[in-house]
Length: 343
Image (cartoon, rainbow, N blue to C red; front, side, top):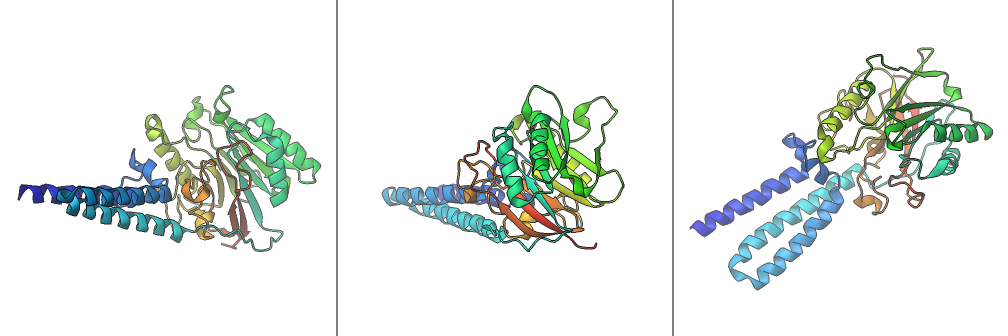
């Protein structure tokens, strides 16, 4: 009797743990350590579950007294693996087709350059290839952004450079945003509270650029800090800040969010994934493709780099660039094409 009770408690505990890992937003744990880290890698977690399932089945064959216990746990792991893979598949395994670009469309490129490990030339080559109108470069100093802008100008596409740096020591504490001159003049507000981190996302900066004329989208290069054990609070605050920026108005936001769609659960409004901003990858069946790190296959990685926009914009193309995994960064670039909706 006691053995059966212990077995039941064990199976229920395994089921509870796997349920939380599968859908942590059901119990509000999607932004809590270590659940938030596990859910970042859904397909990898599914693969681990399958391996554990096989090991439990083998163990059951050689240890008959616990065979029913291992079989029950193996079934739960199989269900977890199948459902996790199903979530990734439903979000999209990658579509790279773009609708033909019109004069009013905006092409957005985002690439965390890992402190400019990629160099300016790689950014310019990709931006030129895709015809980027907006370039979001987390972990990129101003001088690199200027070099990119100069090369883009020489290629016939002048761009304005906006950089926010929390210090000049670590390149990771700089974020640079380039905006095509064809979109008009933009400005970046500098807070007067004397505490730089309070202006945007904590620890790492986000660039929020608004049109000088008052007409056109607010353009944001986003970079909340990563959810390490020491920075969970700042990470949550950063995502909350970005959600607030996207609550209303006309917004295009791109960058390294250090968050998947699972982490953003509960931060959306009016149908948005983060505030009222909708995720371009999700809208184009690409949200299951990992952008970090580059040393694992895309489907095993975490989709944490995003392009988002409010209802004024419709994603008409998106792709995770997988051909530049050896360029030096640990992030893959993402490219989105946004079309005006008239909203």
